[in-house]
Image (tube, rainbow, N blue to C red; front, side, top):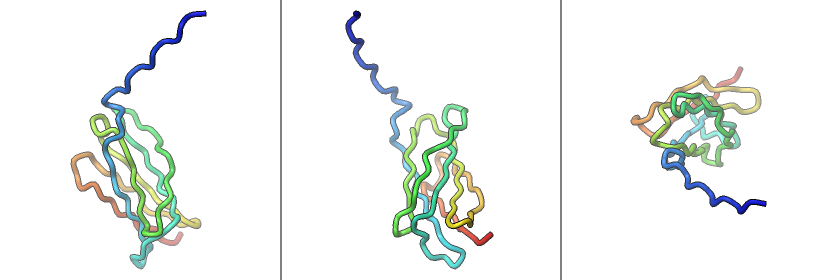
Length: 104
């Protein structure tokens, strides 16, 4: 049996120090609670499917990401069979995205 190796330190590029606020609204501009937010992140040139998030009572969710290696995040929201259009957020722009969910 060999001794256990010490854990490796977290790479600075993998620290999830960035955050993006997502606001989901209905077509009549009301906050949409319990909507699913489906993010896809471009990290180091590779697209990765993010974890599905559920919005709060205020219709908001926060996506955390490694700020040094994430270039863009594509988002789409859904609830009860209705969807928003897909929106792409780019690093360095306003860290708030609004998605409008409309009926099918």
